Length: 152
Ligand code: RP5
View 1 (cartoon, protein in one colour):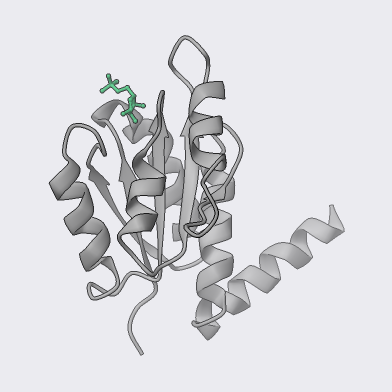
View 2 (cartoon, rainbow, N blue to C red):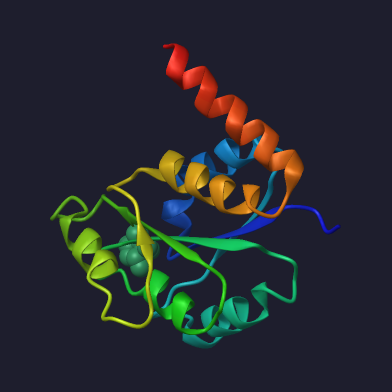
């Protein structure tokens, strides 16, 4: 079986510190994460190519984080059959409210699973949960993580 891995995309190099937290979360579940900067607005062709090739490149899920008028998760979802998790990032004058609405208000037909503003940890957890459906090694760790939380 292939190795469990997730593609993490972001709109700007300035998003990297936030998005690295999703990669760190995935690492706890034995899931490899590759991080790429590609803006839906500034690099539309690169973004489309990354999304189109992701499944063939062995990724089981894509996490896409962006701030301001955050088109990235929706554009990525339009170019792939993989599940896409969108992370609205704060940082702009509206503190992520703009990116939250841009990401969560996808029109019917091309869904993006949206987590809370800056909640890169939940994005990593949701990606691990999705990969747990296919990879028994991830499933084991996911179940252990959930059981551990119940004890707290
Ligand atoms: C979005 O615009 C990026 O995701 C980033 O969060 C925001 C601002 O980009 P920079 O001007 O910091 O590169 O596309």
